[in-house]
Length: 376
Image (cartoon, rainbow, N blue to C red):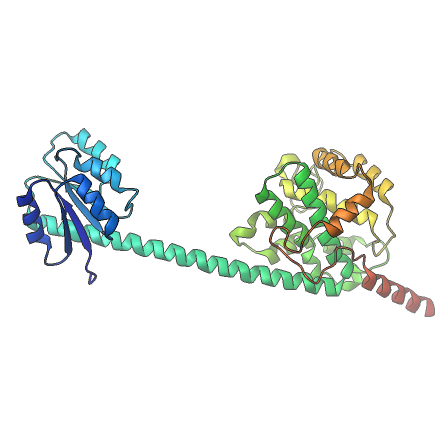
């Protein structure tokens, strides 16, 4: 231990202070105080690693002084010198003052020096651990920022592959946010719902375009490939703590309220609330915009489908929240989705994705494929 520490010693008897200085002054910088109040004043002006105080002092006992030192210097190690023989009183005093160790009087110089050395090793270890925790948090923050950058890039890549899917995800995110607000969810939930909505289909980046753009109903095998996209999306998001809830929303956004969904067959409140909201938003937007295999069925039919799925496919509370948003008509909701949100409404901007995108690229490809088939 090459570092030279500051030690504060507090005792109302000057002779004891001189003796403690003689024992400890060669290895440490010693500050002296003849009362608890004087010791607190020194603590305010100096960085101290260790406090050694006598218990029996007028006006303020050693334990009282140590208790009052906690807001000033909570990390300093504390040693109590005492002539107490009442074990329970000692225990109470140690707990109240966060005392590292008590040393009974009369104390032995060699034992005191050993105790001080070990106390300061504990201080250095604690200090080192605090530094490691700060560095770890900083590294996790940088890693999370890197991950978010990667996710933004994937969202842009998905938009380039299929502009319907990316525009759809942004609309689902914003409709989900509005539903969450209507339900009175807290800010933390809204942030994760925003993330989950934008990322819920990101796993489709691994789905072959022959399936993603197929202008007809999928075969059972193709449906099985498509059903894997929630789990793939969750894998892409990964295990970062800051995205943990969003990841669960993404993974479970095809779970049905009655337990007949996928991938895990969750039911009711076992399905994360964000996933239940994204499912309703996803279904409404899918029904009211063109799909590769069919045209939009329209707002009125979409509402009927949602009402028919209450309690089976959809959470009734979430459906009611969407119906409340639609009371002024679908045009008002669409206007809010396209105009009310900034790119960074709650922290995630997907700058290259347009919430109004309805799939011009994929529609053009579908028409090209149809013409090619007709020419054969």
